[in-house]
Length: 154
Image 1 (tube, rainbow, N blue to C red):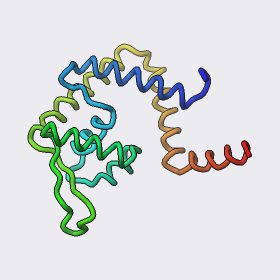
Image 2 (image 1 turned 180 degrees about the vertical axis):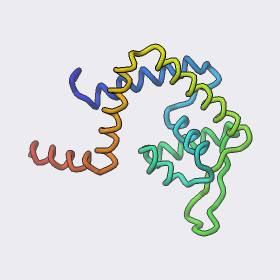
Image 3 (image 1 turned 90 degrees about the horizontal axis):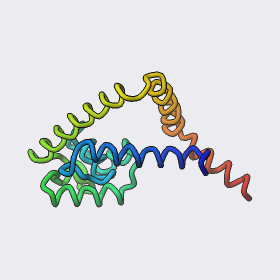
C-alpha cells in the first residue's frame, strides 16, 4: 500500500489539509467539500452545483451537503435559474465573500510558507507531476484505466 500512488496522494492531501486548517486557525474549520464550494463560488459566482462538480471532481451529494452547511452559516445564497428552473444558481453572501477573502489570503500565505520551507526542486517536481496526473484525469484516462483493471481481474 505504501507504494500505491492513490493512497499516497490521499494521505499527503489529508496531512496538508490538516496543516492548512491549523495554519488558518479555528475560525476557518471547513470540511474539504465546504472549502471547495466556498472557493469555487469565490472565483466564479453565481454558478450551479453541477459546474462546481465538474471543476472540483466532488460528487453532487457532497456539494449539496456542503452548500447546506455554508447556507446555514450565512455564506451562500440559492436562487432558481430563470432560464432553466431545474438548476439553482449559487452565490456568496457578503459574509461568504469576507470568509472567502480571508481564506484566500491564508492560502497565499500558506503557499509562500511552503515555498520558503520546502526545497524548490521538490516543489517544482511535485507541481510537474501533479499537472501530468491532472491532465490524465481531465482527458479521461483514469476511466480507461478502470476498464483495463476490470478486464485484468476478470
